[in-house]
Amino acid sequence: MLEEILKKLQATGTKLIAVSKTKPVDAILELYNRGQRIFGENRVQELVRKQGELPADIEWHFIGHMQTNKVKYIAPFIACIHSIDSLKLLKEVNKQAEKNGRTIDCLLQFHIAEEETKFGLDLDEAGGLLSSDDFFKMKNVRIRGVMGMATFTEDEGQVRREFAFLKNIFDELKNMYFPDDPGFSEISMGMSGDYEIALEEGSTMVRLGTLLFGQR
Image 1 (cartoon, rainbow, N blue to C red):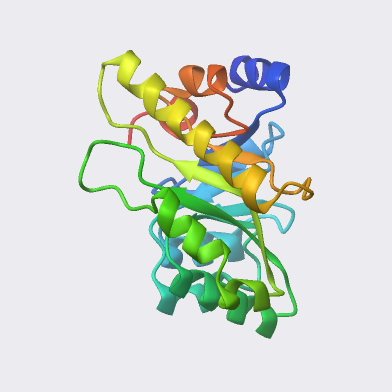
Image 2 (image 1 turned 60 degrees about the vertical axis):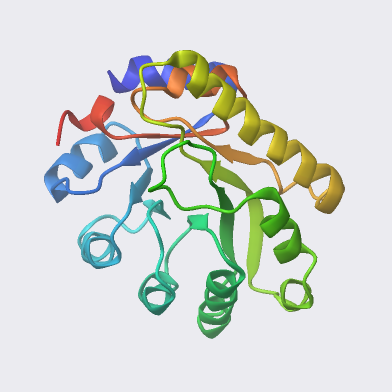
């Protein structure tokens, strides 16, 4: 299954984030030994434990809702945080990155689903963040793009519209705030049930768990 998925992704230049949350170290090592290097976790305590037990060249991405008081635990090693949904959180990531002498890649999370439970910014909130004095002073975070989760539904048309909406948000932010920044290039959207639609709508990162590891 991994090889089949990678072939699809390579055709579009899309990165695979293997979502290893709740999965044992042995299962992660199995994918690692087959060449997978980017893994995503959504709980800080679990991520810190696994990072200490697994090979040092794994690129860890945090994909869950991030609490500001937990940033310090992952700041020494995290490669990318997909879930920046407030200026307060971004300031804390910058602060902890500076303490560790690092620059941390971040994605702005947008609320694109109809479900109430999803976290995320809207376009006005993102604009306020990106045009704030606080943001201009930050030297230890790098905004690399956007992330969003579609509604959990069998209505493929709705999922497609939500992914297209996120792509439009990316394009608008690119034009307004990052026109000369080639680093602002990532659209993290698509999970095991909808990643093929996400690819068609412009995803550059997909977050796959069930397809790679089986049902939780």
